Image (cartoon, rainbow, N blue to C red):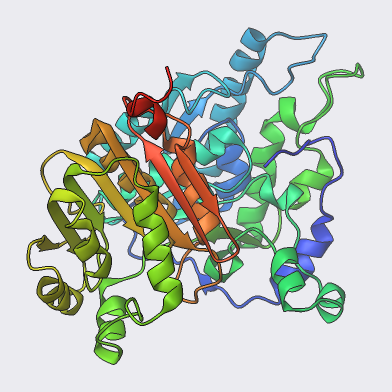
Length: 465
C-alpha cells in the first residue's frame, strides 16, 4: 500500500455515515488491570488510542506507552528544520499530549529511527515482553492495525500480535491511523450498482466485521482534541514554505475525533473445534481421492519437487493422508501433522509407513531438521501472525538443500481467514530467496521456495554450468 498524506483522501463524512450503520461489539475496560499502548510515532498514541487512554485514566487504570520512534522524518522536504530538531520537538509534544490524556501514565521512548521499526523490531519486541512481564493482569495491549499502510505501523502491529499471542492474560486491539485516509467503504449507491464480485472488490480493506468501538464521553473527546493539539508540529504548518505543510490537517484529524474510537480484534486461525466438526460431518474431509481436480493438483505438486528423493519430509496439515502416502514414495522419512484426531486416524491407515502427530502449528512444532516441508491447502486457515511464525519455523528447521512447497486454492472459502494468493505473497515477503517454481492457474497457486543451497534441476544434474 502506498499513499500520500497530502492528498485529500476519503471524506471523513463518508466514514462517519458508514460507521453509523455498523453494530460493533463495545470496548469495555471494566476489569482491565492495565493498558499498554504501542505507538510507532509521536501522535499515534493520541490519534489511535487517545480516547482509550483518557478513559483508562478516569477509571484509575494504569497506562504505559511504548513509543517506537521520535518521528523525525515527518517533514523530509522541510527547508526550515532538521530531523534532529524535529526529534526533540516531537518528543516534547508526545510527553505533553500524554499528560493531557492520563496525568500518571508512564512511557518508554525507544529511540528507534523513524521509518526503521522493521530493522529494529527486536528492540520493540524486547521492550513489550519486558513491560508485559510486570504488568497488572488482565492487560489490554493496543497497537497499530498491521494493514494500516505505513511500514512502521505494520511491523509494530505484527510484533504486538506475536508478543500478545504468547503472553497469558494479555489481549490485543488494533487501531487504524492512515487507513481512514486511503481506504473507503462501499456506499449504498455503489452496492446497488455492483454485482457480488464488484462489491467484494470495492468493500473496505479494513476488517469492519471485526470492529470494536469505544464510546467517548464528551469530556474524554475534549481531552483527546487537546492532546492532539499538543502535537503542533503535525497539526500546523511549520512555516508557509513548501515542505512544511501540516501532516495531520483538520480533514485528517476529523477521522480521529468522532464520538467513538475504533479498533479491530485480531484475526484468529481456524479452530481445532471447527476442523473436528468438519470431519464429524465428512469423515474423509474433502474428496481427495475421487476428485480429478484433487488428483491432478497432487500430481502437479509432486512433479514440482526439485529432487527425486528427500531425506525427511514434513507435511503440515496432512488431513486424511492422501498426499502423505504419495510423499512416502519420495522421502525416506515422512511426518504428517494435523490438529484433527479423526483425520489422523484415517491418515495412519492410508499411509502406514509414515509417522503422524497431533499438533497445531506454529505453536506445536516437531523436533528435527527437514529437507522437504509441504504446506498444502492450510495456509489460508492461519491468522497472518500464525502464518508468519509458521514460515519462520520452517526457515529455522529447513536444511540448506531443502525446499518449502506451498499449494493453495484461489477461490473463496467461507472458513478461511485469507486466500491462496495472500498466503503465497506473505511467504514470499519473508522468504530470503526468490521462488524456484511458481505455477499459477485460475484454481490454485503452487510455489516452491528454495533453501540457501538449492539450485535449478538442470544445474543440479550437471546439464548446465
